[in-house]
Image (cartoon, rainbow, N blue to C red):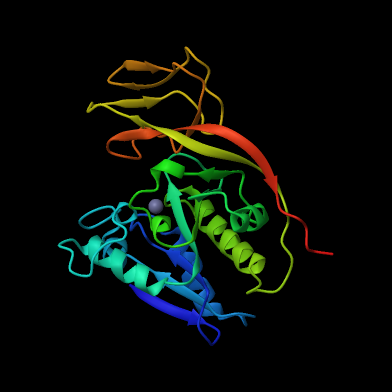
Length: 265
Ligand SMILES: [Zn+2]
């Protein structure tokens, strides 16, 4: 784990990259910022987390770090120990954690809960939606630390790396660490309601687009040609044929639309 800081004093803001070793976009953004060393109005902690997995270009070494929180310093797994160190390192910090997916190219934010802070900050990020995990946060970083996660785009793509850079700078501007103004957007909010499991099979297919409503009776995925049909309407989120081992993704419901008050005047 690589921990660095911009500015002096005790940071209350942190940027985290490389929770998953096969998602290099955020790592590039953080490294670039460290080379640039901009003057910050408040100190920021910058952490590149799973260096061992990044080196091997794998999601994790022993177990998925973003399902391993709170972790334990004496855990048997690399990620179990890493989780505990990261929680200690991030104590008291509002944290911005960058990820990428195999399911959706357009950036969106994921929060544990739509708090006042999320309502204020997330509409200032260049994202298309805010997703609340509610019941599905177990083991994830934000079960321990106040975190805004962003999905920056498709894993390994140049666009995801550029998005990560823009997202990180927008976050640091929104919290007042970097100078300038942000653009305030109206954002739809979704809440995860179900995990869409997949059976063990040779081939997987997904027939629907993320964030586009699936109607009752619509086939949405198949394992070895066996189609799964929607019983109720839902919005698919993080759905991909081969992104995860046991699940296609999540079903969500659409809630409100949020827009933060413009403070640019
Ligand atoms: Zn990730």
